[in-house]
Amino acid sequence: MPIDSWLHAALLLLVSIAAINDLATRRIPNRLLLAALACALVLRLLSAAPLAALLAALGGLALGLALFLPFYLLRGMAAGDVKLLAVVGAFAGPQEVLSIAVLTWCAGGVMALLAVLARGRLKLALGNVMHMAHAVLAPGMTAAAAQQRTSSGTIPYGVAIAIGTIIVLVRHHG
Image (cartoon, rainbow, N blue to C red; front, top):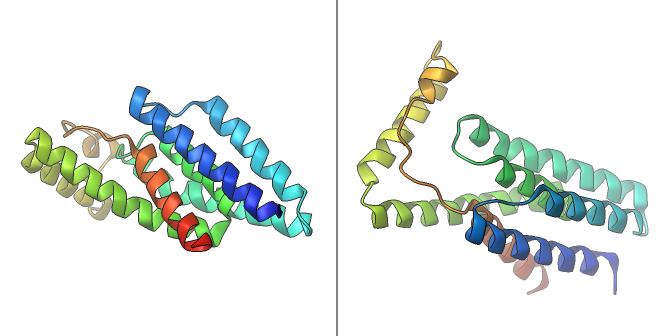
């Protein structure tokens, strides 16, 4: 079996375990992420062009981190979700992690909308979105002022990351 197939199989296993754990505990364990990152790097080093593969892994890791870190800083996402996408990037590389992130945002948006509607907190959620947008766009607004809002609830975003990843993998192999 080629290295790409091993990478994709390990990635599928990672996002499945992370999603299940996030649903059950609302946490994505650091041990899982560290083990998966080590697996991704070892598999990349075993490829036919190890240096290029390792650079792709590091580029995917960096891009995955950069794409979700702003949401963590705005308190719109947990650190485990940011780290999960970074590790997904190490498996997928920069080009695929961008597609995964876009699909994850779509899945996460649908999940968040359904959760907010189910909890009857649509007005609060819209107010929070407007507040975050104002914090980003308004010059001089302090981070502390931007964060003083009541949460409209959370969702297990590891599930959204799994959905985005699985869609990309299915498209790749489909």
